[in-house]
Image (cartoon, rainbow, N blue to C red):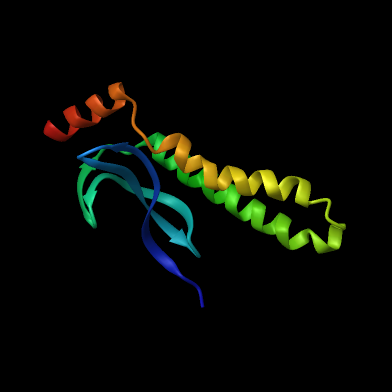
Length: 119
């Protein structure tokens, strides 16, 4: 079964009390391929349309690439006598650490997002 459609990826720039930036992508098997639109997600599915966020798009693509690279490395561990573990472990850590690095919006970015929402 092949899964495809539209889904939000690239969750970045969370503003406390307001929402988080996410980009809707056309995806195949949960691999973000084509960015469609960016929204400030206020809660659940509600959102305010914003201009396409390059940061959100790059985070979605990079995080997807890191995930699939780590998965392939872990699958290859038995056939490479554990050598790919040297690459798989840092990739796995990077996959889980990336949201911590990009999720919070800086004060300047939060002000810019608030201004673009009110305009």
